[in-house]
Image 1 (tube, rainbow, N blue to C red):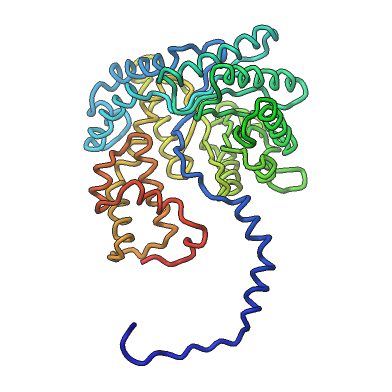
Image 2: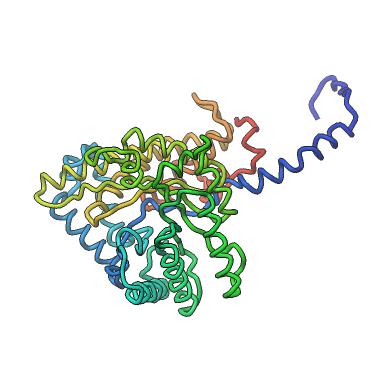
Length: 435
């Protein structure tokens, strides 16, 4: 107890008042917990790679990594050439270059989707059946022998009438094949494209419910991403945000919202030369996606660029600078995932991601350490900022941009468990002022 006179505490409200208020807000508390559970705290891949169903093979991931390494060796064989190509500071390029090479050797793809939609197109039913069964066998085999990407799955055809039955059958063949091969892998991800109405999301939920029931799988086990490719998926006819309805319609199964750069911009009439992820129309759509998804546990992914880094070095460098700049721009806007369409995009994906985390991790770690130790500094941080700082460091660790030892050293000995505690606080903790 402190010294000196103890203040007398008086109140005016009976305890019943607080009880009545709590009772009246109980439905709101339940609603918040159900619909805004917060980030799941799991790893988010930095990108998604799409490979057509007829092209995907057992060696696809290693092949992409080898092609990316060859491009790096030919067009930026050392840190100095990478710095020149991308406009990076030389000291930062020296840190990044070796890490990019190591990443391409160890884990070239973080998230792979076997594509049965636009990248595959319409095929005879027997051909698509066989391709879906083959994809299931190869994905199961990759997880079995340790060659899988951390996340893998398929993009089925959409829920529109013309292709609905085909999409449902392909999903059934793929999931059934995985079950026959030993069960659903932990990193399974499914993508539902061209979603326009929330009712199409509801249909996907019912489809997955039926599969889980038929195979005796725990209800809610299978989640899926919603691909945002139409104007109607952003703004409904009554002026409300359709994407928010879609998240609610997913009943907790939605794992991500993926922006479709070219379908969406074409839907708005954007000329082909200006269809890019930094177009104002793209920024508007992703901002609405981001706000709708905030707090729900659903993550937002940026789209892609169709400018491929191929040809002579000068042309490759030009494409690399574009991709690097778009990726850095997305990271600054909290779109921590995007799409890569070519093996030559992998060097700049990882260069941009690694540079983003390496150039700021020491300051972020020191700032978090001051917050944790209540030692002050020139910034008075709140729990919400501690959440952002720790999330930044964790994402850097997950992708390989940072090492646990250097983060712990810069953060005054804070462990990964400490970072995770700051990154996923209880809801009420975010309203309490930090030190």
